[in-house]
Amino acid sequence: MQHAPDSSIAVADPPAAMNAFPHFLRRIFSFPVAIAFLLAALAVCTVRSRFDDPDMWWHLKMGQVIWTTHTIPLHDIFSYTTNHHASVPQEWLGEVSIYLAYKLAGYSGMMAWLCLFAAAILVGAYWLSSFYSGNLKVGFLGGLIVWLFSTVGLSIRPQMIGYLLLIVELAVIYLGRTRSPRWFLCLPILFALWINCHGSFILGIAIAAMYLFSSLFHFEMGSLIAERWEPARRKMLAIGLALSLPALFLNPDGIHQILYPVKAFSTQGLALALSQEWQATPLTDARAKALLLILLASFLLVILRRSQLFFDELLTLCAATWLGLSHQRTLFAFGILAAPILCRQLAALWDNYEPEKEVPWMNAVFIAGALLVAISLFPSAHNLETQAQAKSPVKAVAYILNHHLRGPMLNDYLYGGYLIWAAPQYPVMIDGRADVYEWSGFFDQYVRWMSLGQDPRVLLQKYGVNFCLLTQDSPMVQVLALLPDWKKVYSDSNSVVFERDAAENRP
Image 1 (cartoon, one colour):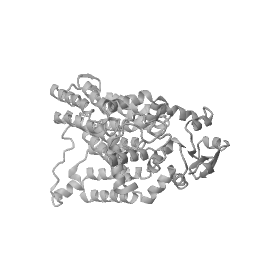
Image 2 (cartoon, rainbow, N blue to C red):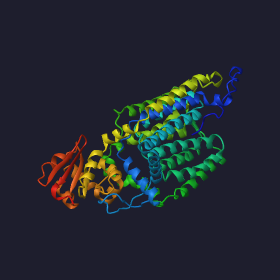
Image 3 (tube, one colour):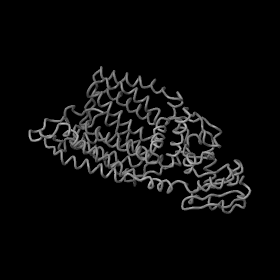
Image 4 (cartoon, helix red, strand yellow):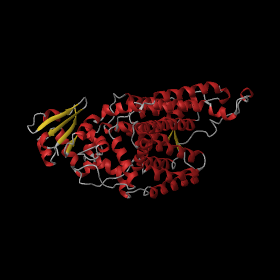
């Protein structure tokens, strides 16, 4: 990012009346710090009830496998239907961090992991928007914008690290553009980390390349302006981006991991079509309306000559809008990319932060209140157990283990992740790792079975299934109840277990 004046948020000397307040306390109990704590408390309030993502379990298990075996699996080790198909460990480092949080404090550690990254994203967006716009008050709006769009994806998954690194990348580009171009040399380090945490590194590469492209142009078309960078600065960005490409090879699976995002989008047509988070964003969604409102505000400010729009910002907004409208999941990225731009456009319309008017004791009250809210609302271990039971087959798995049901098992797609973690002795039929199932050719078979696209007995007989674990609302619950060789042996508020010839299938 660029264009913000470097000195616009510099802290002025405090008046004599404040000199009695220790300098270090003035810096701690300042308005920007109070806003940061407020956003952190907002993050905790938002994620406290989100211990329910079905994919977090297999991420947790993979992290455990990597940490305890000191190896990174390059093939599937959890399912009996993929025939150990090749698997890309694109999130292995993020998965290890999730497991270490669990190892440190169980479920509470995992929730603390989520709170930490959610808070870091909101606070990072606030600081980025503040420095980019040159207005610390407007920067708070940037943090709120990112919060709104982040609600689509705040969960215990490695993607949280990817979004945080996107903010870091934008900050590096801003610093390299407005301060020392040596900041661009941080990009290879950033991407060497990013590729081992999440596949969104490909978006980071595209963003850096877009800034390099826009740095070549110089024109003025009304309020649309392109600023050609000085050659030395542009050259340094080109070097940083060029070095980032070999840095991507610092991963356990080489070129396969680098090409994974492209392969995932080009070869997972069925999985992407059926996954809600990869569906196009409906315009009835409140976040879609907010997206359109942000675009309208940005372009109205340009049309009314209240603000300029720079060429790199236009490219960024176009890319962000395409992402946000194409897939619900990438609304998160839209917020991160669009917030600093709108904040810069609004900066002149909003009074800036004036440090000489600071009231440290009032800021201290806000900080203490935010801390109190965050601590008091952090969910208890019992609450986290309850959340897990509400979405995962906790009681059903306990029944399966206690009664020693004999596999192979057919499980619901959403339950696969929890089974990988809680019942590793039962290889799953399928789980949230849609890529490996589509690549191995099994995903299509499973979808046809679940959608009654074929005789349900075909899949059951092909894999010798002896018991099924399904959700209560699965249409196959009604079908299995009608099959003569199957009997319902367990049921609770969210899960059902069917067994084939139950009495004969136990050891």
